Length: 140
Length: 140
DNA sequence: TATTGTTATACTCTATAACTATA
DNA sequence: TATAGTTATAGAGTATAACAATA
Image (tube, rainbow over the protein chains, first blue to last red):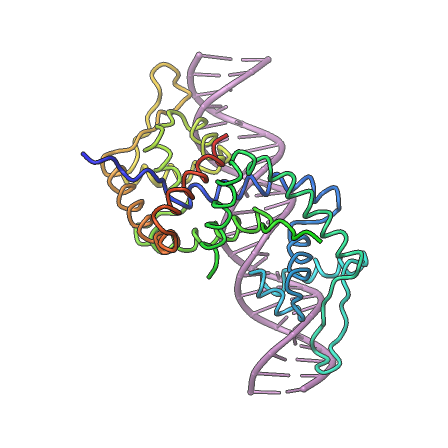
């Protein structure tokens, strides 16, 4: 009998890994007083600069109601700017403050260092091939 | 200035991919009347044969109270066997029935076919390298 | 006294619906 | 009438604590 395909379910590999990566992130986020959603919001604003709350929610796959408390908190702490769009006063324009950008960069750096615990298991060649394949797969 | 490391957060790649993989699994599971946890339980029993409920819960990273309703359902439907351990009558010994094994194999095959939507983006070489690296990473 | 499995309860997270202010 | 944002409510999912049976 032919040996079965050596792979298990892809989901069975990916999902638990994702859970462990999030667990590893948790202490870093806690040190900075950020929830996971807050960090996702900061990252989305840093990378793409989603202008409105609706666009931001869409881009991170969250319900529009879910991010409101997150934005309230980030604004109170001076990490984001949130002001009415002069052209459409229903909408709120979002952007990172310098402090928000610094915080995001610091958290990202610490998280990436932590992730070396996993990526360090790979040789440099494996690592770049792996990340390239992963990027290719996740691209819509 | 040197170009930044080309990778983003690993978690930012892995976690959303996991979510999409689970979304793709959902219709398959629904066709078989299984929840995600039920499928996880069937797979764990098929792969390793976790003898007791506590061992099973531990192996799949679930709370022991969370799998009870799942086991009740799987037992009612004749997919698992669950009987008191004669050596320790507090414990329940779990195993797949032939029907359970067939169901698990059918679901897994359908899920893996669905996952080719993602893996198909890779060349055969990339694919095997990617899966090997992923397996290496996820190994404790 | 400790452990396996179970049940009941409380808590967190998330989505749904209803509201306001603008357009 | 439709849309951006907000609030309040309800539902699902999860963990915590208390319990019964056995060791």
